[in-house]
Image (cartoon, rainbow, N blue to C red):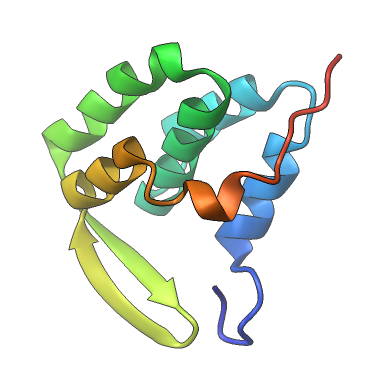
Length: 105
């Protein structure tokens, strides 16, 4: 959540990508070119839309294990990427994402 209590910029970007007809390709680009937070959102996308590739991407982020800036409302903290990947893998964030369905080409 952002400082105003609404969706964060990252969540808004995730939802826009997830609603597109080429979501998996866009998540792949975000993972390759984005910061650590973008990589985490991309992993959520892989888990939701193409689980078969999730683990290969997750493994590369676990291996580097950078810190991730997590912000909820106006409270921020740092967490190791491996901890966030574990949460994504367990479905911890699914409740926030379940209403998003990709558009079909």
